[in-house]
Amino acid sequence: MIKGIFFDLGGTLYTYKNVPAATTPLLHKALRKVEVVASKDQVKNAYFEATNLTIKEYAGKSYYLHESFFLAVFKSFIELLGGIAKDELNDWYIDSHRKCIVDCLELKTDSISLLKTLKNMGVYTSVVSNIDQDMIEPLIARDQLHNYLNHWISSEKVKSCKPDQKIFRHALELANLSEKEVLFVGDSPEHDIAGASRLGMVTVLITDGGMPPPLQSGVKKVTPDFTIKELSDILGVIGS
Image (cartoon, rainbow, N blue to C red; front, side, top):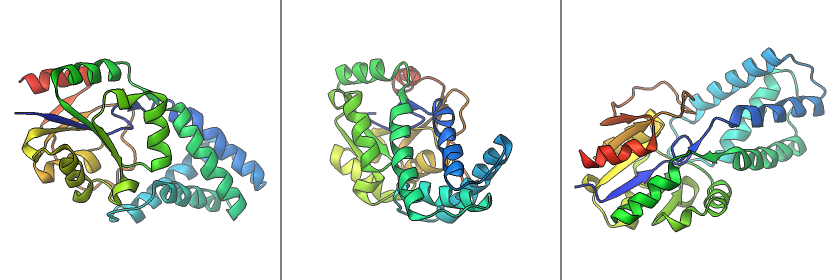
């Protein structure tokens, strides 16, 4: 019997749909700061390459600050276009990027209604996210998710990034639930589904309106128990 549902944050309760349009101007501004001229296509291709290079570097790590990951991508991006990423520029980018991400992430249209329903049903709910504290806490506070969640944890807080097992085990201990009693919902095949499945949780892969899940390295994926398009579809899953 399912007694608890653990949610990923970005791509699951929140949509990433606004992220590209919100963050791309930062890259162009950074290039102007280092006096590098590049076309839109060159910027897009360089950022794509920098991201993939960094994903390969970080894929085997059981824990890292996501600030460090984003900074590594940025520095690689600048260097690929012939610039030099100095400390002052790096600090500006990380601060601007963090604020930009927090500001542009928005809850999916059925997030609150689902969380309210689950709370009324007595289902234990949690967020288990690969994100730093200075991102998760502002989002929880801004959208008042503390009114609906029993707890939430970040990879920084636990010093473990999905699919590493430590973060999943910590969430289970907080909930006082066994892995067989928990449904894990996430948009990342590699982080959410693979990690939760390995521990024995029932897994649900949710799509983010056609947005590809971020930070995928291409390693072998685990097939989820269920795949859904809308968060509200979870009610059908737990009722089945």
